Length: 178
Image (cartoon, rainbow, N blue to C red; front, side, top):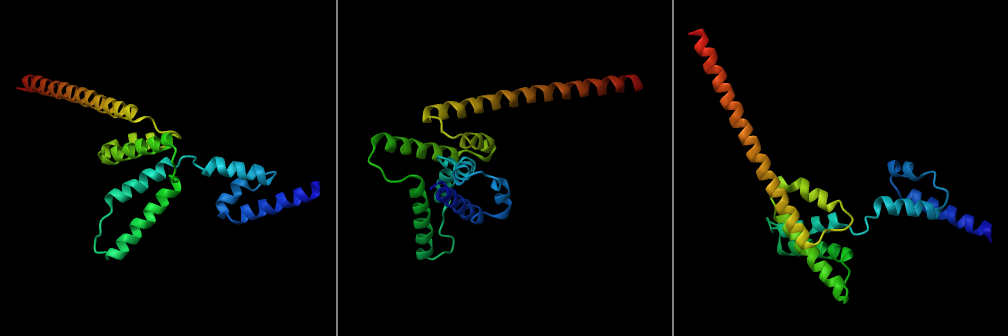
């Protein structure tokens, strides 16, 4: 029976490796079993909550315009995006899960509404496996904005000081040469 399991494992490994692109296959080529291979692939590529994908689909939906497409083309694009979103958020009747999805949608809309100067903050938030709560998100963005104001005012102060120093230095030099 052990020989049969080993053959099945090798067959599964072969199937998995042959379904990958060559540069990806090289990463997993020396796995000892199909289970080990599957777990390694799942850990590396199986983003458990797909937060970034959900965010991007929501952003694409929010920005979608007809732009010369026929109504049928637009509807096809919408339905395709909605279907893809449904893969990440399967239908449920669990109240806690519905609240979680509702809060995630609010977070995605909030992040999508921020200016491009908040792109780094959005990226760092979306790279986490779990999203922070909506209230935590409010606080994080507010803290980011406060830090930017402090840093901008400090750079303006130091810029003013350096300008004043340059003007003083220039006046001193001019006073010596005249």
